[in-house]
Length: 100
Image 1 (tube, helix red, strand yellow):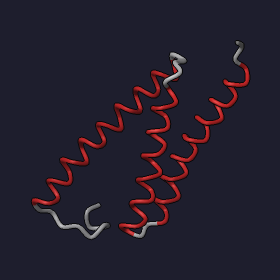
Image 2 (cartoon, helix red, strand yellow):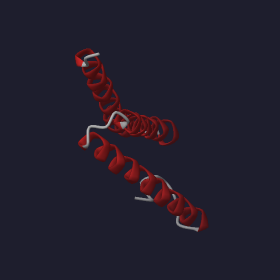
Image 3 (cartoon, one colour):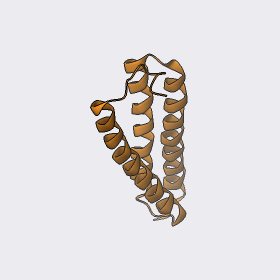
């Protein structure tokens, strides 16, 4: 995989791996918290879903501009956009059915 992106193993690669590991841990925790919030039907689920969706969109755009890989732009950004749109639609539907 390193050769695919034109990267050689060295101290910079180890540092990048360390940072990437923590980033993936953070995203995994956000995904688990968002899933838990959705499962328990708590109103704060939307914030976590938006953070996760925007993260995916950012990853797709970042990989495209850094490495020129349009496949990742399409795949990652569509996943993020889907999360954001579905969260927005769920909130819009819920607001219309709420009684006061």
